[in-house]
Length: 234
Image (cartoon, rainbow, N blue to C red; front, side):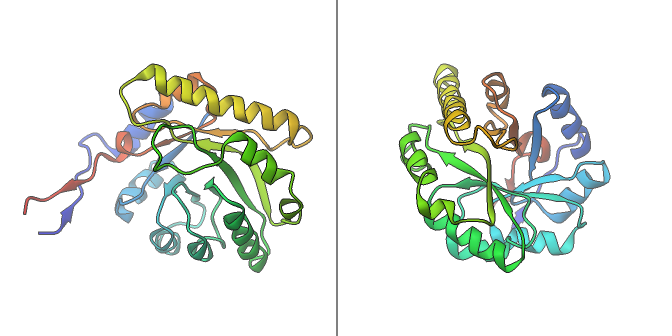
């Protein structure tokens, strides 16, 4: 048998409302709809929510083409350069920019569509080596480079990071604190005159409340809204 998707008895819209009640005004909720069927997104949309996050470019393109055009789509996963072309026409924000090579490709594809694409710089704040991202000195070197200054079709509006997957809340809090400190340093030294450099994207279903306490402006929540993906028994 193939996969089946089990949605909570409590409606998706109700789940979104519960999360919204738990976050303060000024923090944006990205409803992470990756792997979920269009019907689940439609249910959320019909309940009044229009901000969704995806992590597979071709899947996102298909959803963009099939669903309402006033949805605000966020790309939240690791983005390969050869996949930027699928989302450049419509994506609202790319959360995980981790290299000059990727920035240059986003700029190239944005130019083709006569757009400026908003991006977040991803920082490596977790213990896991598998996670991507800059450290502070690497990010500053990149931002001060002539290469970066030539990119006119990208707009850096903040930072993003993922904490270590652990039950140790002190460690998670420390990592989020580090990301906020990185943001503050970049704001002071690199973006002091840029009013839209404001976003700190951190926090998911299991740790978004800690992230908000440490300064998150944007949380990415999936399983608490749509339910965990279920597989049918073989």
